[in-house]
Structures are given as structure tokens and as C-alpha cells.
Length: 392
Image (cartoon, rainbow, N blue to C red; front, side, top):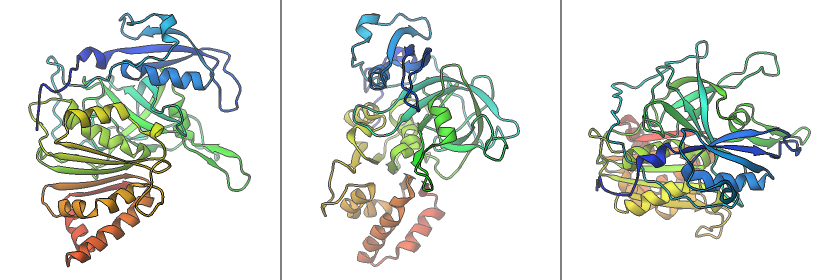
């Protein structure tokens, strides 16, 4: 499978980040901001960010390169959405990968956290999407924080809770590989959805404290980090593994890290030659997170990456109901179950816990067809570190 020449990436794409100065953005209380807000945007997501700003009634007053580069278009052109090329990433020849010899855990603790800087906060949604989902990148070059694909970090939002005590940390799955989105071992990225729900007692809209804090970060803002934590969702080292990944919404985060390591980075000590299959559940097509990245990988590595969407509000399952991740598992139940019985297959679930019970029921039925007890097989998979579940 491994093709070191796949794609047409220039490392320049990965480092081209621009700063948008925006005025007039709509706030949560539906008022308009009177001052400027600043957002850092990678070249590959400039079009999406322009569309988001337009939806919120904002106006871009300037676009400046973060690292001194000159934009490839002028300010007048920037007011009209453009479609930048999607960059396939490969490791720059000058990059010397840092070796991580053991799983790092709790390098930074709540009583002694690491304070990083936000260097990117960009929109992941398109016109017609629901909710707010942001891709955030933090500079961690000032400390010794390191991590592996599949781990999480804690974020401590500022302020106090309703009891006057400091806010507690919230865990977020890491969306970047151990080398970071810039492939320099100096950043860490998250995929964050702003939590929003109705208070059942009074009907008022409630926004998540930490998710709102993160989604509203500006370039240069401090972010308080703990961790990393977690050994449950680690990517197997076997380059010939079959990796089945089920994700809903921002549960895509660890799998984005997996796929970048498998297909977009090139390292002497890891060249993926197996099969990766992602089944990704979202409500609308406009909610597909990292769509361009995923579909370009699928196009360039058709023999080794399989991409299946479950778009609940736009697709129907065989019974005429909504298409969820568990519906896709039913659709491919025989094939998936056969894969699970092979020693190189790893199964991952990340996202809403509601998908787990129906998937377990489906596998129970498949096991019975073969005279096997699903509970026994799942215990064996877990014992051999091939069953990985992180749901909420």
C-alpha cells in the first residue's frame, strides 16, 4: 500500500496560517461586537472561515500572514469565498521526529498545569450545518508536553463554578498526531463542539462552560492544559493492522490523528500497509468534519482507506428510518464480524454512547449465527487490546 509519492503536498501549505481581523460578529446575546476579533486560519480552511463569518454578519477588515508570507490574493478578492487547494501532508525532509518510547501520562497535573497559547481557531462546518464546531491548535513549545495518538488532554476553563470554586478540568480527545499539525512537535490540536442545551426547569439555553471558552479563543489567548491521559484508544503499532473506527460528531478527533499518522505523515519507523475503515455519523452533509482531508485520503489510498458516512437527517436505513452509525454496522455486520475474528483487527468506537447498545446487539446476533458467544469474544478482544471504546 505505502506510496511515498502519493499526493502533491508542499510543506508550505501546512505552515501557511493567516490572521483574520473581523468586526461586527454576532454574539450569543444576538448583539454585534463593536470591536475587532482576531482568528488564525490555515490556508486550507480559509474558504470555510469566510463563509462562517458571513453567516454571522461579520466583516473581514484585514487578512495578514502569521509568518510574514504574502497572501496569494488581495483584500478585495478575499471578500468573495474562494476554494483553496486541499493539501496532502507528508513529512518535510528537514523534520527530525521526536521519539516517544513510552506512553506519556499526566506530565502536567491540575495543580501544576501547562499554559499554552491558542494559535488557530477555525470553523469546521459549512452552510446548512447545525451547531458550532471548531478546530483549535495550541502552541506547546514552551514546555515538555508530549502525547500519542488516541490520548486526551484536560482543559481548565478560567473562573469559578456556581459554588465559587475554581473550574474543574474537562477532557478532550486530541485531534493531531504526536508531531502536531505543523509537524514540528510544537503544537497540539482539538476538535471542539460548543455544548448547548435547554434547561429542563426554565427552558433557558445553557452553554457549556469549557466548550464555549475554547470556541471563543482568539489568537494568543492562554489555554490551561493538563495531561495527557489515556491508554484505551492508542493506535496499534502493527503497520499491517485492520483498524475499524466508528465515530459520531467530534468523536472523529482521535481518528483524524490516526489517519494523519497512517497516510499523511511519512516516517521511517511507521509505514501503514493495512486497512483503515472509518464509519462516520453526522446529522447533515454540512456537518462532516474534516471532509476535504478525509475524502482526499480516500481518493489517494483506495486500497487502504475506506470511508463510510452515516448522515442521519439525509439518508435512510433499510427499514426507512434515520441512518446512524449503528445502522451502517447492521448493513455491514457480516463483513465486520468476520474481520473481528482475525488477529490483526482492532475495533474503535468514539462518540455518543447511544450507538454502543445496538452495535452490541448486532454482534450478538452475528455471533449466534456462527455458534459463538459475543460476550466471550468481546472479552477476548478486550484482553488482547483489540477492542477500544470511549463513549459519552
